[in-house]
Image (tube, rainbow, N blue to C red; front, side, top):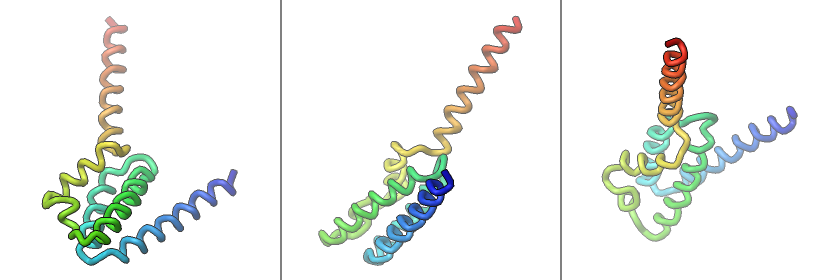
Length: 118
């Protein structure tokens, strides 16, 4: 059991370092955009944050391909980088999603209690 946990933690760190090295190898405009996207997205990370890591890994791949094609970073994301991030986050597990579900769950539980008390 502990071995599995250690393998996951160490594997995740190694994967993160590899991703960050790939990001640092990108052209400077991509590095800047990637860093800002990363900051933006981790504000919304839910659970263990692995959904964000998966998104960022895919994003680095997109950036690497686009840079190799000679595109500038904003040609990929558009000028509204936050909107680009919001689109990426649509399929990620976020805290706002957690809050959404928790709020609905709490409302229904409380209403059910009210109904049963009457």
